[in-house]
Length: 341
Image 1 (tube, rainbow, N blue to C red):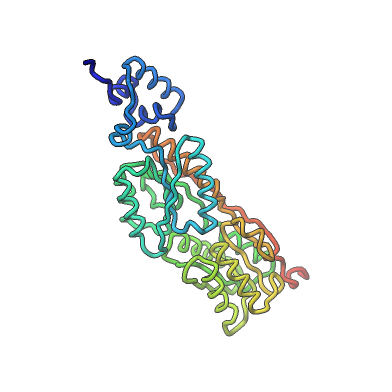
Image 2: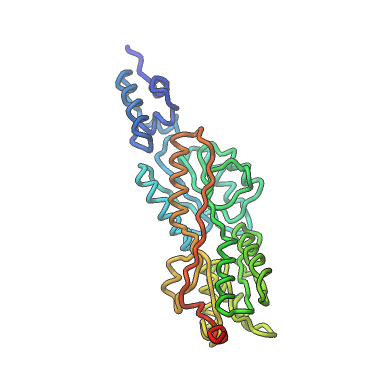
């Protein structure tokens, strides 16, 4: 009985890795040159694929996992759209999973460890908190991982980030130019990666401006938490604030609700800005001034990095950045005093 050719032999003959040979034969992401070499090698050897052996031995599932903290958050919905566009075009299926919890990375660590069981060919991860343990676990994960967020320098991981600190500074500078002088920063939990970065951006911006600044933390990054925290800000004793810079759109919309609850005119009495420029920013009243961090584009870039990493595991890690962009809308018109200057 003739010896049956194996995928390992096909890969050796084609001069590619076993994983690349598997993807080429299964119509998954691979360069045309790789596909041609692998198919010719398979024909020469008379290779007949075994579907079950392929999945079990090579771990080629045809699936990408996208892990986020909260799948209901519009930022992650827009990221997911970008990831899906690239993943589908590359022949993969997308699975989305929620890690949950802003203060504990345990769920994220558990997810990374589960990747050792071969559930997916790659992982796009957008963690709210980054710890040394998390970075070490990413490095130990046997499948390619791309992070949307900021990792320590030299982490050696494909990363797509944005300068959210600069984004908050853009909002502060805009409000100052509009005549606002008593500006409150409404943050989410400050021990998260975005919370720390956005607080830093606010502090750096107000340090160079003639404003009275204050900082406040909501329980989380949700609309309800923003509404509750904004009530406290707007009813505090002393001179009232005339602007709220929120760390994301959900907190900002919560602040708009609080202003409405208290009968405060926006933008006449109070200006409000957000960060992320989600689809919600244009449909609230008044439309929300917000800093775009282009979540969809970040998702696309992350998926592109991941599919390239799957195709070539030896390539050098890349760090890409998407710049912030301020979109001015009705929630931050000038004060009457500014118009008379």
